[in-house]
Amino acid sequence: MTCPHGRTYAILSNLIVLLLPDLVAGAEKKDAAPSHQIAVCSPHFGSPEIVCVDLDGNIERLGDPGPAGHSPTWSRKGDRIAFIGAGGRIAAWDLLKQEETVLLDRQIRSNHLSWSPDGERIALTAAPEDGVRQLSVLTVEDRQLVRLTEFADEVRFPSWAPDGKSILFSVHPEKGPSAIWTIRPDGTEQRSLRIEGHYWTSPNWSPSGKTLAFGRYRQGKNGIFIVRLHDRKERVIEETRTSKHPVWSPDGRFLAYLRHAKTEEESKLLDLVVFDVVFGIRETILHEDVAKYGSRPAWRPVRDHGAETGPDQE
Image (cartoon, rainbow, N blue to C red; front, side, top):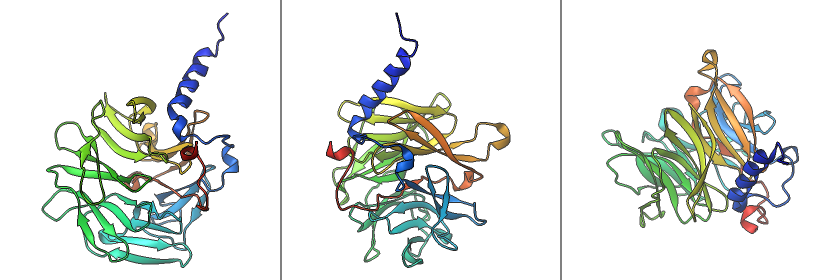
C-alpha cells in the first residue's frame, strides 16, 4: 500500500539532504530564536528608514528616527549597519551611540553593499558619471575606495564569503544572460562559477560557504534557487513572477527574500518572505508598500560570537 504522503516526505527529505551543510543540528522552533531579525528599508514609521523585522513580523526601529537609507549591511558584531543614504553617500549607523558616521560623502552611484566578515571593508558597486557600475572595496578605517573589476557590463550584488577570502557578484550585460563571478579582495583570481542556466543574479553565500542562494529569471518568472557547489546540484525554493534577492540567516536555517504581492490591486506592495529550510515552511512576515525600497534584506548577525555554532561545525 502506498502512503498518500509519500511524495511530500520524499520532497522534504531531498531538500534536507541538499541543505545538510547549512542546517543546524537539533534546530529549535523559530519562536525560540530571538536573534533572528532582518533589516529592510520600510516607510512603516512615516519616512523611509531602515528597520528590523523579526520572524513574527514585529518591527523594531533602530533609532528615533532611524537611519534613512537603503541597501543595509551589518557589521559582524551586529552593532553597526552600513547603508546608502541621501545623495548616494555611504554611511554607518551605530546602534549603541545612536549616531551616523559618513564613510564616503560623494556620489558613486552605488546600489548594493556587503560588509566583510572581519569588519574592515565594505564591498560595493560604484561607477563614475560616464561609466557602468563595477565592484569596489571601501576600507572602513581610512575611507579608501579601491576598484576591483573592469567589466564592460554592470556589476551588482556583492556578497562576502564567510571566510572573507573572496567576494561573489553578478555581471549584467545589456543583452544576453547574466552570470555569477568570484574575486579575491585584492582583485586577483577573478573567475566565473560557470553554473548551468541563464540570468543568474543576487548571489548570497550560505554560512558554511558550501551552498549559494541566488535569483534566476527564466520563462517569464524570477525564481529563488539554491545550488550546492561541490556537485552543482540545485533546487527551486520558489518561482514566481517577482521573487528576488535571497539571503541566508546566520545559522543557515532560513532564507529571506522579496516578492511582489500576487494580486493586481496590491502589485506595488513588496512582501518580505522567510523560508524555513528545515520544515519547508514559507511565511510572509512583512507586507508593505516598499516596492521602490526593494533592496536586498540583511539578517542581523547572532549577537554572541564567542563560540561558533550551527552548520559549519557539523
